[in-house]
Image 1 (tube, rainbow, N blue to C red):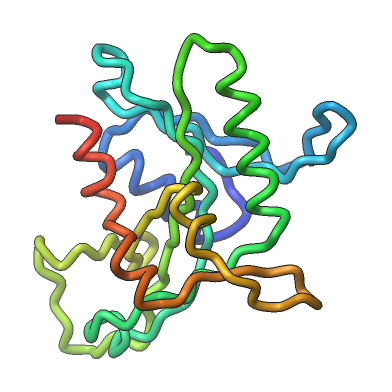
Image 2: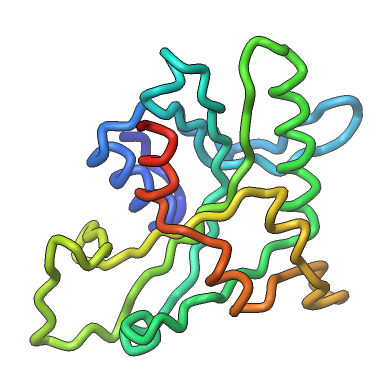
Amino acid sequence: MAKRGEHYEQSFEAYLNHCQLPYVPVSQQHKALFAGNSLKSFDFIVYPKKHFKNRVPIILVDVKGRKLPFKDFNNNKHGENWVTNDDIESMQQWQEIFRADKTDDYLAIFVFAYWIFDIPEDFIPQTACDLFINENKYYYFTTLDLAAYCRHMTDRSEKWQTVNMPRKIFRQLTCKFKDFINARNT
């Protein structure tokens, strides 16, 4: 496993390894330059297992880390989902760059990696609780494809150049990463 900068990306990479999904980590060292434009890097290229037989799209993943108190997670109140305008524009361009070779299809997605904190001491995770434990931290991975995000995004902060989605719509449209990937592997 490559040493990655943020614990959110590290935990997602550990999750990919746990699920035995083929992937390539993308270097975060430099911004890429294409056609004179500087592009923010995304984090992973993930190959669904069915890709090799059924030509399922290859997934370009940009991990967005967010903190979430356990009580909010437990009450299904996740939904902090802001991204920058640069995230949107770069992912759109990456998707087009990868699709330009016409040999494979590519799907750009955001994975929101929620670090669940303030977990009660008596909490015992069950197999079905959807939390992934990495280095004694609990994570919940949910995903939304770029096109769906763009259809529902609204300006959040002009000063910080950020956008987001209303949380209710976000929760309706996202799915757990494991369900997202399983749908592509069946």
